Length: 168
Length: 68
Image (cartoon, rainbow over all chains, first blue to last red):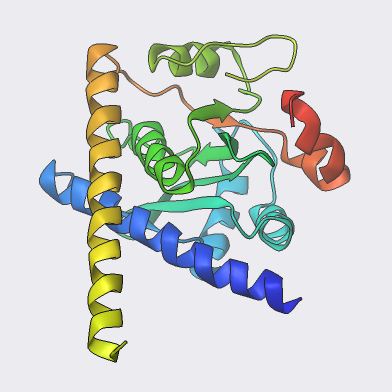
């Protein structure tokens, strides 16, 4: 890893942590007991392997491989692992565009077996808005919703679907 | 400049950044409330993205929103 890459990784990790700290304060303020936002680590990646055994899972992703490749490529990335007590309930990964004006949510996956009352998209949006604020980005994009239900759900949050490139 | 002064400036910058993060979260929450989206049930198996495409060709995946 180049020194400049390592420096960027360290600098942006500080910013990522600052955002996650604020999301955790939000969980406390809104009485979402047991919820916590953390950086993606080995423990989370190990737990995500359990998702592949779920019949409810909609995608066949290897987060270990995906996270490793994304992390290496994008030191300015957005990342979050959401936990409910000891259960990993979602992963999300994104990055600013090269002109810095937009923040993309490249991947999000909720634990296919999480309890219905545990929500992961709303805290992910809040964390992305906060990270966009830190970076000076003014627009969020959610790439490639996996189906119509997910797309419609995102639209309810105010996102607009752009069909030619499949993002909101 | 003394270390104390440097520390003080850094602390002030951090405080300001924390305020702006909090303000951004507050605004986003209000927007979500205005859209009546806060109590919606999440679709089962919520996911988006195409990790296989990214792993196969990250350069192409970067261009997916067409205005990089």
